[in-house]
Length: 312
Image (cartoon, rainbow, N blue to C red; front, top):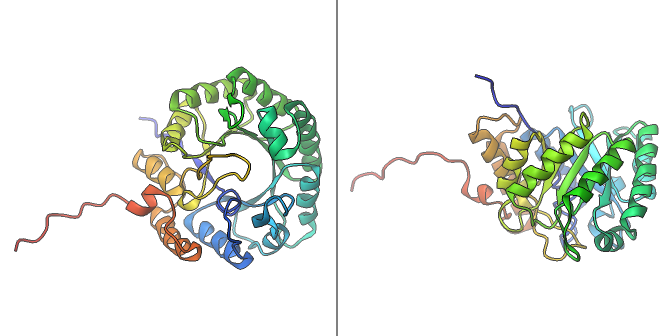
C-alpha cells in the first residue's frame, strides 16, 4: 500500500488570527505565541502584516515582532504585504539578526473587495503584484501570493472559477513561487474547492498551491479534505480558529489548527504537529485573550475512550 502524502500547515494566528481583534495584543504576547507555535511543530508561520496601522491597528508593531523572532529554530517566517511599501518593509528586515524568509503578496479576485481592501481593481492588482513579486525575489525573499476572495466576494457574490484560474496563471507568469487560494469569507463548499484546486494545479504546475480557508459556515475542514483529494498539500490555519478580515463583512475565523490536525492525523496523514501541544497552546492563549477560542476540536480535545463509569 502507498502511504498517504503528508501535508504542511502554515500557522497564521499571529497575523490573520489577530488582525481583527479589537483589543491590542502586546508584542511580548505575540512573540510568546510564536514560541508556542514552534513548540507545537509549526515550521512556517505568518508573523505580521506590513499595512497602514491606522487601517489595521493590531499590526502596528510588525517590525517589533520581526525584530523579536527567535533564531536557529528551523522555521520560516512570513510577512504579509499588500503593496510595494509593504514589500520594502519586509525587505528591510533582511539586515536584522533574524530576517523574514517570505513575502506574502495578495491579489483580490474582485474589483469591489480589492478597492476596499487595497485601493485597487483587479487589473491594478495584477500590475502591482507582478512588481511586488519581482522586488521580493530580487531581494532574496521567497515570493508567494494569495488570491483573496477566490470563492466569493462579500460585495459581488460568487467568483467565476475561470477568472481565478486566469489570475493564478498570471501570477505564475509573474514569478510567484507559491499560490494560495483563499476562501476569505467562508462561502465555499467541498465540490467547489475540489474543482478549483484541481484546475489551478493543472494551470500552474509545478508551482505549489496552498489553501487558506475560513470557517464561517462550518465547512472549512470538509473543504480542506476536498482540497487534499484534489492534490493540495499545504494549508493555512490558525490556533484556536481565530481570525477574520476587517474589510470583509461576515467573515469568521480561520480553520482551526486543531481541526486540521484532528482531520489529517485521524486519516493517517502526517502533519509534523503535536496535537497535545496544540491543545495546551490553545488553553494558554485563551488565557491571554481572556476567553475560550472558537475551535471546536480545541474545546473537545482528542478522542480518547473514557471507559465505563465505576459501579456504585
